[in-house]
Image 1 (tube, rainbow, N blue to C red):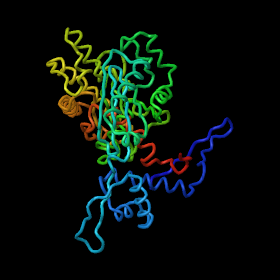
Image 2 (cartoon, rainbow, N blue to C red):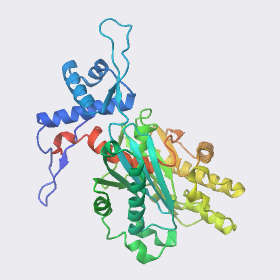
Image 3 (cartoon, rainbow, N blue to C red):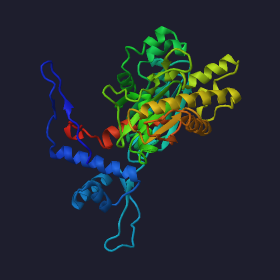
Image 4 (cartoon, rainbow, N blue to C red):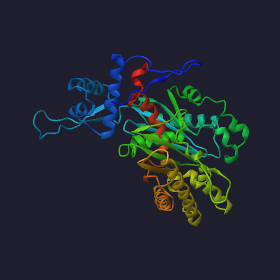
Length: 410
């Protein structure tokens, strides 16, 4: 069973850390249900006997839990597996139609809304590009997109939508100069409660997370997560960001800002010290293209298949790879990561070139005293932020939560 982390209580006189509350029967049952669902998600399908062996729960307890989850439509029975002594083994898997969720990615140049099922498959997708986002623009996009999705989905399935997850860059108002946006428009984000605004418009629960952290969560759940216990995750969007996974769990950090790799101090050649965000972000490619008189619009309109930008694109990839290699060595000197995973808002072919160039650049970095990690291409892809956002409502209710025993559950 996962570790249970205490809730920290701080006063002026006292900084003692105490666990809050005991684990009553209801909380234990909720924890065990989440544990079973998480194991089934990770392995694809498991029998009752396998779950009992992996969890240490009694066969009777597992049987009761799985019957309840099946009755609720969250688990589905597979075909009996024969060939062993005793009763045939019946594998259980997640029911794709058991629960749905919406995921909204608010980017600095585009937004995307998806409808995702319980196994992580994207059923519907809507997207829109812009020069810069405003709260009013986003609410209008979500309202129109949801109305369109509802027309294409039956009422019975729509009733299974558990909520809306939102992935967006924190402190959007600080990017006025970089985005070329009017200060008054971007300042609207400063005093906007995004969750409340969208909850009123949607009449659904809303969960908000940093966009790169959400993308890391998607990789953890639907990508390399089962393969690597600990990894650093870079997502190259308009600006680069990232996330941290430790012991097969997302590590958000004290303020929820762990993996803010874009803010990592960086110096290229004799230039003044700046940050990784200035050397490994898609906006650098946009600026190079604009300087050369090329139209960069396909970067934002068609991230999965933007046009071939030739030598300019190659130059950007090489510069990005050099920066990523330096950043990889830096993060691995703090935590001995098994892998570094690279993904972004571009096609698999562009991602493959960046990953290969980064592997080569690692050979030029002084790694004395640091164990070189495996460099992998992310498996989720350009929609990782939206998929991560959609996973937030699902995981908040159905995934393993190390603090669930100490929460009042709705």
